[in-house]
Image (cartoon, rainbow, N blue to C red):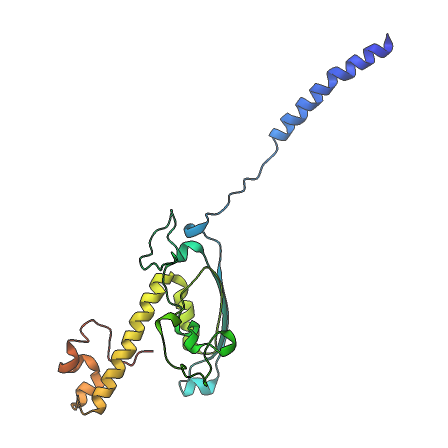
Length: 223
């Protein structure tokens, strides 16, 4: 009889212990893990730059740019080069379904070393640019480096822009360089003999005023 009562008592205590444990666990503080948004709204870092610049007294006296070195790495995601369901903003789409955003000049075969797919000086096609030579941004990782102050400045200033805006800004910059070169040739050919026109830049020249009315120039040489 004693053995039977002991077994029954243990059986009744087991559910009570389990119930007490579950209540205790429910009252314990908990942590909520909130995953940040992905894709076009992600707040995770995907671009990093390490930059080092130095300057000295002589450089400041002679107004020399600082000595700079910079390396950057960036990941390009699918929505940045393709139109997906939640993010459809690309206009110039190639036959492969990817947006045609040209890589900057340093990423084109014309300026790449031979071991990275560029053309050698001995190549008869060296220096010539064909349409099929243009390389575009694609999904994946990109590595970039520079040894100039302007390169560092341009790289950091472009970190706030998407690929579309980067390409448009680069196109505007190239247009500035082209117009400035034409204006310099215009001066060499005898145009703009007025000293005031030469100092003020293309905007003051009657022959170039119509072409420069877009506001691309301010009279200073483009960077």
